[in-house]
Image (cartoon, rainbow, N blue to C red; front, side):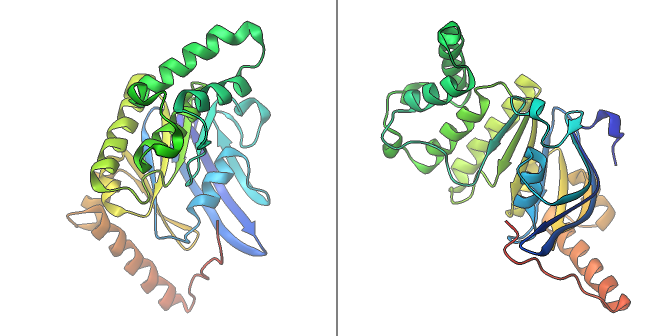
Length: 265
């Protein structure tokens, strides 16, 4: 585990309850600053609940969770975190530019911020490669382009931390590759920390560091290379399956088995 003082996100014994069920079970992990950390695991393992805890919208948590040096949910973090949910947050009857202008007005209200809003919109359009589609209606965009609009909205405030909940779900391999290339540019050019969830294991290789989850528990917090080396496997997917088998064997030996969360998101 990383030195906690250097971490963008640092969790100690993080537990979360939803609908009377324990969804996150005593997690300890760190997210390094300025890098891409992948949060991977099968659907229903608690990834979305963990991301909600990081952005401060998850009620009923216990343990310690520090984000950018502040307690998760601290009002001072609102302008420093960009959060992109699984479903693109765009208005179909507005153009791309109008969508961004609307959200920029929410972030920077008032006449005195008019120039700053325009600059933020222009910058965000360029960063997500949508300048050529700025005047297109959102309803006419492809799935990948809509995902880029949501990402552009999150970038308007120049956040220090981007939390992306399965941003490539439903996209074809080419669009997924293009989005991941964009994530790496954002991390490299801005120094932004990215926490990206996925249940597609081949995306793990694109991350600098990985958090692997199963049934609300953390199986690993390491780099892809170290996970492969320690498990003696060729891919992160094989390493994950090895960790699952090891955990299952330990549960069986102890006479227990983890209770699968119900509707963990």
